[in-house]
Image 1 (cartoon, rainbow, N blue to C red):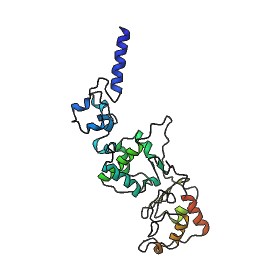
Image 2: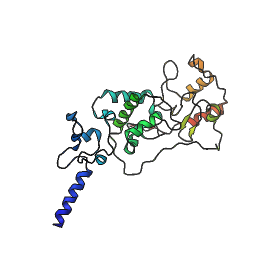
Image 3: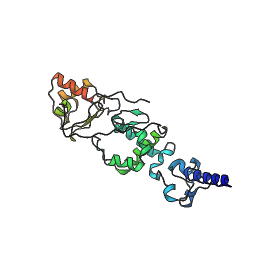
Image 4: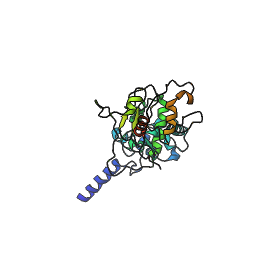
Length: 270
């Protein structure tokens, strides 16, 4: 008798803690109409727990409809989000789909600890040194779906995940040439020195020498390199006629130090 009670309790606990009900009853359908049945069960797209009618348990880590497009093959919302990841060079700082720079949070792992609404809020209200993209809601939804799809292939790591945090100190203990000559207009996350600069007038230069930065040097859209940056600083309007940036006079040593401050660690490549 004791064994039977213990076994019954074990089965009930397993039923509540699993995404799929042991008895086969899907409590989601008591409140929500079925849709896309060919894709599988409710939890295949929305997570949550179908084996209980208790609201808080059933909706634990739930993915709402607008963030579940990534579960549908060739979904246009997700495809547009993937394009935005490239167009806005998100990988200049982040890793997504297993590739990118390691200057900020790994988006493939961030979604393991944060729900889609938290990720959207991070885009809408950017943290220090993150560019302000001013995306409308639909654009944010597209991006989140692309991020969720990219991280779908990754399992939860056994070890604790490191968290990348950037902050401004009250004092700068060394003179950075980027701060001195560029920082009034630009900002940049750097691999060795964290965030540099305080300006919001010019573009964010995080990851400028990496393969994930915007291809926007010159009319033929070249990648930025130390050579191209040197040409730009000597006469920006020779490269882009209507740019507002004036020439910047630097000694060879100052220019080399700026390049060293902006250099990247090896990026993650899938």
